[in-house]
Length: 203
Image (cartoon, rainbow, N blue to C red; front, side, top):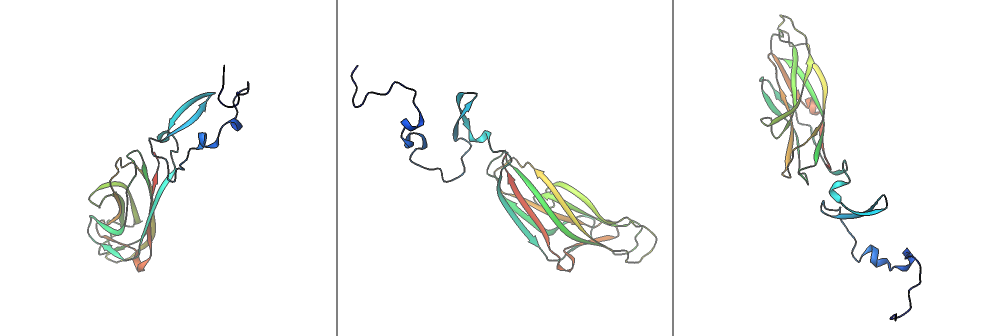
């Protein structure tokens, strides 16, 4: 048998026998792999293709943070925004959003405290008319026939929620506050700062 050029050596092919461009290609990937990109792996010695969508779950893809330090007071027994919110746009419907918030609140009286001195803080997807994800009471469960404006309470209410919005549309997360009976509530009293952080987690 005739050969063009040198006759190949009678031995197994090793890495040094191949030009580097055969393996690495000419173009470097400058961004994160798309879900449809493929990797070549060895599965117990058998070469297989692997979609990028099957690896990397749990990776933090983006972070959004916001603060609010304007005092907002709610006297009604219904939710109003505390002024603290942030929005994030997931890259994939399979991704999740980790919501972390810390809100400074002040609960106080507007009259007889027979219903106690506690009010509500809630975490919502969307506005306070949207989906309620979590809810906490804040304050003191003190009750008497007194009409005194005391006792009063200052607290920090934190939420940690892993949400599955199942969409690639922008999602807003809002902290709301609600009075409860004769108890009112103020967020960011004395211009204290509240914070919210949204982290997109690969699904």
